[in-house]
Every structure is written in C-alpha cells, then in structure tokens.
Image (tube, rainbow, N blue to C red):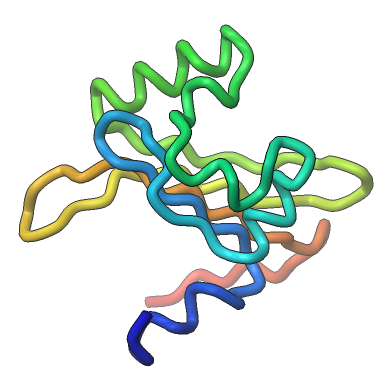
Length: 114
C-alpha cells in the first residue's frame, strides 16, 4: 500500500470494501477486529451477503441492485455508531460498496453553516 493510502489500515473507524458482486476486497484493522468472531481478515474474498441473516441480506442485495446508500445509527454494548454504507466508483463506474462504521458520542454538537 503506498503512502497515500496507508491511512486506511489504522484508521479508527471500521472500513469494509466489497466489489459489485459483494465479494469483500478490503478491510482495515478496525473492521477485522469488529468482525473477529466471524473470521476478521479471513473474510476478504468471502461474499458480504453470506455474512448477514436473511432479512439483512435481502436489504443489502436490494441496495447493491439499486446502488442506494444506507445510513443509520445503532447502539451496541453501550456504544453508539454511525453506519454509512455507500456505493463506490472508479473512473465513474460502479465498483461495489463501502461500509464505514464510526463510534460517535451519544450527545454531539450539530452546526448549521451558511
């Protein structure tokens, strides 16, 4: 990984990247740690659809088919997280999905900028 992209590995949020067929092609340390019970880095090369129960798998398949973003917050084990699942592109061509999961405070400032 070149220096420009080396930030990815140790970024404090979980980043998982899949291709247009749903195959996991990259993940960083935080994602591997988050999915450690499911195999961590060994998930690279596996299909992301196989990692979800039926209802979530169907929703994810629809997102992939329609290339629609899915953005929400969750609370798990007393930690609030922002889940940001969006299509990624290369040279204007759809390549798959990126899931970014960031821990966020329960109370946080919100600013309206003009």
